[in-house]
Image 1 (cartoon, rainbow, N blue to C red):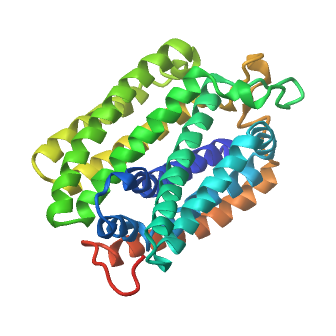
Image 2: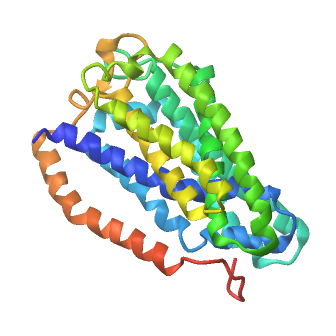
Length: 338
């Protein structure tokens, strides 16, 4: 078994799991200001209240797995993204704190402050995730010594910014489809309208990002010739995206949400295909890119981690499934709600 390839695939699974699960959490935060009343804002927060911290375990596991399996990549990426990652950390902290603090006082100014912190943290975190993906695809100034040689401004280029906006659009749509499953009454009817608007926003940026990627990132399609079966995932991605408006029109929110999950999983897979065998392209020279071999730990380390992962991942999956099942259904506001 190629352990380097195995860990590349496992990182992709963790990233897809995080994007799907915390994606709707972040999407709910992005949509938070568009509610009309305090009761509606509480409903949105409580729709993700029992889930968001468990969903972020996937991100923590992803970071830990990259640190152990690909330490060279971890070190280079975190050095290059030091300032954006600090911003990301603050965004995630304020997002979490806002949920815990918002309803502790009845003061409207207090609650409005935390409402905007919830929105700002969710939107900024999503945007920064997209910028990181865009830079990984387009390439970062990495030298022969595997060190980042640029500045923070080098990371804010048109393509990564576009991917960041696409991430915001994707999670906003994902969050609105999730809210269709969790709400009822007048709010549910208005969220149905959000479904259409967020899908339109997503579709426009999906097309722009796809075209921009084909033009600006020629390496994105280098593996398609060697592995033509990858085109099947492209077709499945298109079918999943196409089924979202169909399900919205037929008032089948669960089908729409499942299609959104499938589209995000397919996009994550295609992101991995575009990168492989690299984890981060070098914009200075292809020979200096960090890949699954020159940035990996020893084979013994990867083997030990494989055994731990095979023991631990079923528990993570089981926990996620149980929590989603226990807290299924419509949101009800009670005495102990957010």
